[in-house]
Image (cartoon, rainbow, N blue to C red; front, side):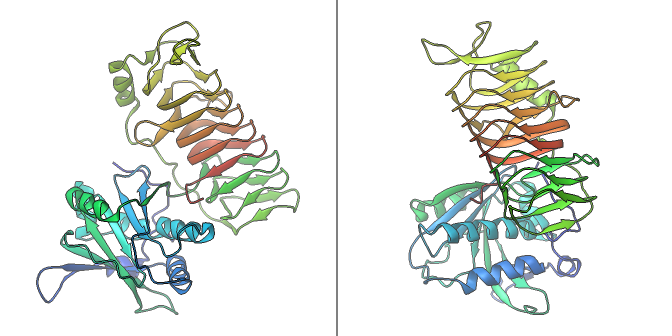
Length: 411
């Protein structure tokens, strides 16, 4: 199962005509079929820009191997400029734009192969290169084409499709690719229709990725950077003008992203590893062993942790791969911790139903990677200096801290 966080009618999908024309066409030699993908205007523009700004031919393996969070899918994007931060950002944003408009939108054999689990990776070959074409790939190539007034009929490149064995062989050819994880859709998404749906206070906070609000987008803080802009269902209120803001647009809201498994599934996984707790827990480190435990002394291991109450991270400098699932709240109250998602790219899921619960980042200088879900409560960041990579989906999104970075992985 994969997680969607984009509406069917948005630019993140094929245009209606393009979807109708997404056909698998056998090649004359009878060996390789083609499925045409007519990119939306925004994706065509991004692709044209990337191709036009090629600094030099891609003459050696210099690739991003991008894991698409929440999906069983990787995307290989060759790069022509190793170490160039601006180019890195451009190519990762392009990858994020192209995947939903190709594999995830396919109505042909590529889509069928992905849905069945046979297709696990694609390679976006859009630059002039001396890198050899793969010797083994699946039976259908994706052909990336433009479809707007400027690019109608233009072919940008080819998307090679791989099963698990073919992907492993291509990885062996790549040598040492740059491994990145990207989250599709909005970096934060609140679905409350109220005036405090997304409420950004504090100062000097940075968002990479679109900020989406089901109600009002309120920016009352100071010196924010939101380069990819915001989408809001009702209106926007921006109190000061000293921000770096991308385009803001009013558009209809859509459903929040959801977890790829049920609460019962995570309960079962946690119970099997001894990580089920029936009451509130605070996770700390044992001063002797350095391993995790509760304040009451019960051991806690990496993996899925399920609590019928609330989960609080109460110690500093914990490093662990966990998936925290709580029937009440989850609070990252410690500082200088480093947590990555253990299962399904999901770091924290709260079933809390009031804003005192939800998922909170109240500590400082933490590094958190994974999806945060609080569909009936709030995702909040009140600490400072935190780095949150992933996506957050909640009824309300509120930031009151300072010097925090929330990223979809493109930077």
